[in-house]
Image (cartoon, rainbow, N blue to C red; front, side, top):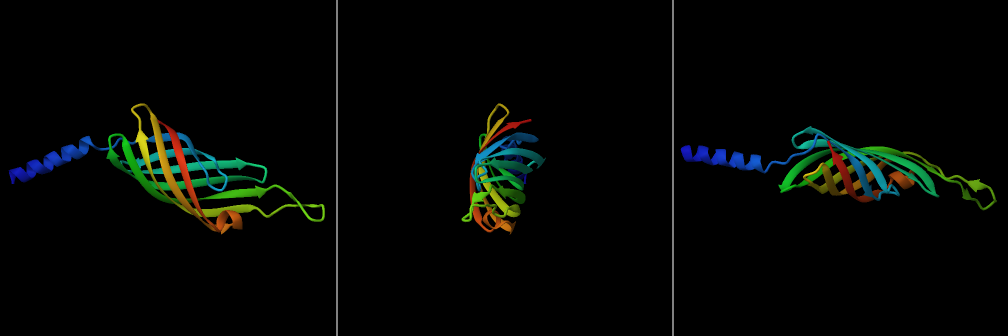
Length: 168
């Protein structure tokens, strides 16, 4: 019995020493590509030791369209080794797109339909927590449109991005 108790105690100490340290807040940029959204302002908030929420706001002003996208994710974070963590999550978001007029066949400009769209998303990635308050991540976020404008909602989108965040 004493050996079993000692083993459990040593196992607990080993796990405690290797436990991850996730900052309460992280703010920065998520740089990737999803329907033309090349950059997003990203905020992460710790809920408890292994769970957090992430909120990202992306916008795009291009020749063809102007758009914004707001994404919210609930994530579970797990320690790998050293300062590396891996995480996965689920969530969704909404956005709006407005297309610029294009020349029509009769000389009059034609404005394609735009509007709101809604999507669900998954998330999986790895991150490195530097000894300074800097967090780098690489994640993969598949998104599926469920409601809204056809070209921005009725598709399956792969979004791969690099995250650079300041932790506080």
